[in-house]
Length: 349
Image (tube, rainbow, N blue to C red; front, top):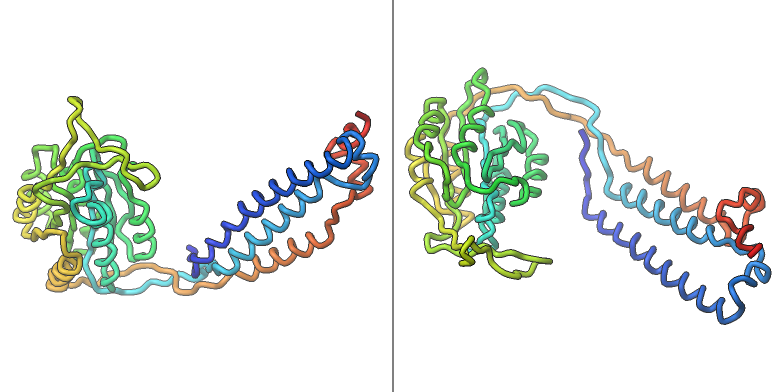
């Protein structure tokens, strides 16, 4: 297990492609200037010690040095000790709808991003509870099993998008069925499923599968995202809307939120339906319901001691930059004998 303490420093890595671009422009400029001074075939005679490969080697060393120093600034930490701790809490599984209809922007910034915001804020308020994560569209798939690792759960949550499932649709029944396999009956914890969707269900056995969840002791809290009036599904390129999704007849598809489906699921499982317009209100309501449930004591293993590893990357970065200082633009005799860059062949032309 490892953690990255200050990931914001990764932006410094953007300097590396900029350096290569500047190097490429400078190389073209040098070539042009040399051609004004003498023909290329005479240049090896005029400057026999000039090395074409050394400048690139220096750039690679500098780039690697920058990269390793950036990693040192990020300060990666590796877990070195695992301990078993006792916690009190409940098990909560979040099921996010990632179908294309969740791209509709009738709730800002769009339905999917709103679902992720709500989920993230709920996780931020949790303490001893365990969480799991499921995604679904035309089919359901596991993202994170039940865990106390909120950081990893948030990381996977951020990466969820509408391209994760090739089959489109909204298989809510599959999401509920998959969630029933997440909970461990041996721990006898209270079980909660938070289902975030626009409610556009394309299956017919929701009552049956919801009753199965209720019989397993799972409460389902449903959060509706979108408007009953509906909205088109934008097709974007580089962040800008190019057009809207159309059906086989060429008409713009309007996707509408269906609260009835979500209300039905919540009522069967003794849960509660909420509309996701107001993030704070929804998070507070979910948290109030969670706190009303009896907490169960359970054991979990976690890394208790993390050690910084920045010194290895700092040392390597310094070594690379020192090596760069000893790489000169002129040819090295023993390397010249190897003829790595075919310079002898060029000189004969």
